[in-house]
Amino acid sequence: MQLLLFNAFNGLIQGVFYALMALGLALILSLNSVINMAHGGFLVIGAYLAYALSPYLGFWGALVAGPILAAAIGLAVERLLIRPIYKRTDPLYSLLLTFGLALIVEDMTRTIWGPQGLPLEIPDVINSPVSEVYFFVTGYRLFVIVITTAAVVGLYLLLRYTLLGIRIRAGINDLETTAALGVNIYRLRALNFGFGCLFAGLSGVLAAGVLGLTPPMGNSLIMPSFVAIIIGGVGSLFGAVVGGLIIGLAAGITTTYYPAASEAVIYLMMLIVLVVRPRGLFGEEGLFE
Amino acid sequence: MTAVLRAHDIHSFYGKSHILHGVSLEVNEGEIVAVLGRNGAGKTTTVRSLMGLTPPRGGRCEILGHDTTHWPPHRIAGLGVGYVPEGRKIFGGLTVLENLRVPQARPGPWDVERVFRLFPRLAERRSQPGRQLSGGEQEMLSIARPLLLNPKLMLLDEPSQGLAPLIVREVMQVVRQMREEGLAVLLIEQNAPLSLSIADRAYILDDGKVVYSGKAAELAKDTELVNKLAGAGSKAASSRTAGEPPAR
Image 1 (cartoon, rainbow over the protein chains, first blue to last red):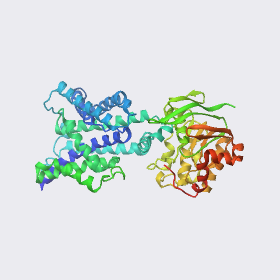
Image 2 (cartoon, rainbow over the protein chains, first blue to last red):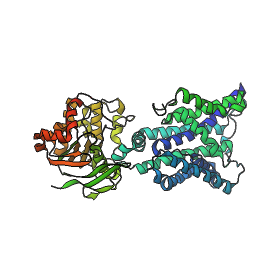
Image 3 (cartoon, one colour):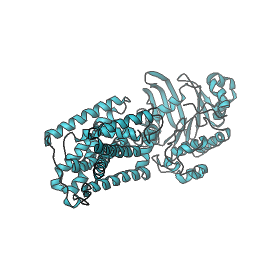
Image 4 (cartoon, helix red, strand yellow):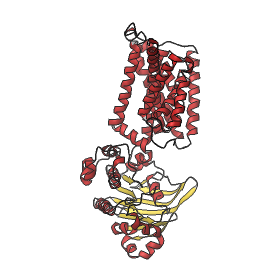
């Protein structure tokens, strides 16, 4: 029983990272119409910059600076590379472009910081187990859950109540009409891309505290995040979060009974969803059916 | 009279197909100009080109003294150009009030409160998602949204499409009111008798070209000419008001 709880909790933490990643991916996919293969790259950027800055800023400063720098780099990438290809409606262009970016980022981190894993120092205050029986429930893991919840709620409030958020939702619904109502959709899409990268960067810093830093960490998180979007439903931000948590939990629980299948189970779930309910749990009707 | 909108020899394409073959038209201050024509004559492409949604590849658009030929839509809207798209294009997941917050508002007499006074039905439904509104209410919302830009020029693409006659009358009343407030209006309509009854001048498009331009009152008298040049449209008009679903 304790083993099951242990694995389920590990899975939940993993799922939290998937959910954060999937949320950013889904935002960018919905408004920018870009399948952002470089999303893992922004995760790595956030994580490594936080690592590099933590001796100067401390953990807390790095936790803030990492995601913000990832977002800033995201804004520059959007302006210089993504914006020129918006007018090409074939998604292949952005797919190949971001795929190339992902490879560049991974190799750059390997060149700068080396291929070996690096630890991100976490303050003792939040790193001790909460109880002896449930030794795996460390303060840091609870902290990850709290920060992620706050970020997701923050995004919800932004989309629901601010002018920017209303316009992002309008743009997702009908970009052309939004532009014809005087909204600068270039700026809207840039900001939205920045938000997506902010979530990738945050996911990177938080994941570095649990999993450590390695150059391919982004690419190992990105595939399950795509699966999370498909299970949750393309077009639904809420679905992306739920999808991420579900596959994380499922992988964790499977580890208890049949560890070898823990990764395969994610893709098996995607297969079942695609056959039984192609729109995903919360997706809009008619995207795949 | 000053020209608010002047389009000169516009050529527009969808992909490789040449849709507009040199359209020229003008709208002056305080004037309602109707554009008639059959299905596929290029009416919608004309407004889309003027709005920057289908940028013209040839010719020149001048709006409020600026050469807007290659401007993106949001800059054109920012000059004070309101656009009511064909098929209303309400943001279905957004509430009525949220739909009204999307436009980049410009200072002027029109604000959300005044829009709600003009369309009390929308005020009643302010917290409902756009997709739950009736066709008539969606049309009201589609007209209300660009009013918040405090426009000097309104481009309306088939506002009567798929609406009951009573609601069509209400919509036309609002269009008249726009003129009284000094707006210039370009009204795209298939329903010729209806649009000619409120317009000052009219153009007829056929096959991507202007085939007639003149005073609306004169054209209204010449039913034969209207039928010949914009035929299918004016015949369909009577059956369409009976509730045919909007053609998309």
